[in-house]
Image (cartoon, rainbow, N blue to C red):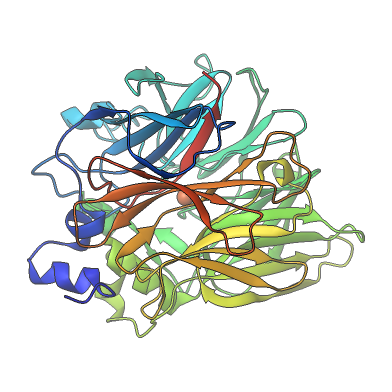
Length: 466
Ligand SMILES: [Fe+2]
């Protein structure tokens, strides 16, 4: 069997890719204690690694890899030991069939699958999904309930809020298929929602991420639009690429309102994930993200289970998104944009202390799901020199998002660790991997054998301490 085309092998089994193989769900919740460690876990890493993802319940077909019920996988580290692993579904009302629109037509923002990311905020662990409220979890991964900032948040919350490294304040947004299509929010570090304003956009789009600088927030108003016909099918993701939707990027002061947004027309494209943004010495906004053109978007969307390919034919792209940069000049309205590198990647990550500030390093993942000829790599880009380094995983291992965790008393931007879960393409195996982010070879320092396969998923987080 060709490990470079797991999705082709799976379709032969008659299952969509998101229900089998390395994306396929596990059927139950387990826990195991005192896991086997190869190498040495840095003793300073005491805390909890969590990773969220889509894991449909047995017998369910959600129609898309993005719409399965959330499942969080946790690994507790302490003093160089891997104390436990456990996995738990995020127990939201969608498990009992609740839907985003109630039978009486009203919107239920508690009815989300909470499958995308983890946010450590105000002492809470939150599981997020972009079309509903977050759900709070305990440190043993049991579900507490929806989190709405003490009743203040009444609309969806993105899975990609930005935490200001200096103040702990969070900036975020929610998008919806009903007006208001986009709402901007700011909350204090301790749970007070202090600013919520609707922003005018052309129509309802899938806005997965945004960016923040020291003084501005940045909106990606890109041409992947809500489609009522797809929504009537009641499965999958009701969004598709549109050549008619004008692509643009908006810049507004932090804490601003709709009248403050400056819009810049950009090339058609889609961005699931921002790397980072900052203001340069001339005051220009510099934004790094993973950019997809139409062919590469349709290719990925098809693989994840979306419907856009039905309308457009099988896309010819063999590649995924690439690291890309936009420079937006607030003084004269000028835009320059283009790729930073030609390698197909996803899950760009920077040191959290650099969010909104100038950064040098971006970590990302390149694998055969993302690029047909791709390897199985965790990649480190030096955006100042253009250098790219990679650690190649052994054939068959598919690395997931590698989050950055700063070393104790770190002395440089890349002084720290990368943490990820790698899933085997064909076997019932998974590993938790810790790499040295400052090592040019990104060599793993420790590999923890997990008790079974963990489906390839979305975003992780590290919560230091007890
Ligand atoms: Fe994401």
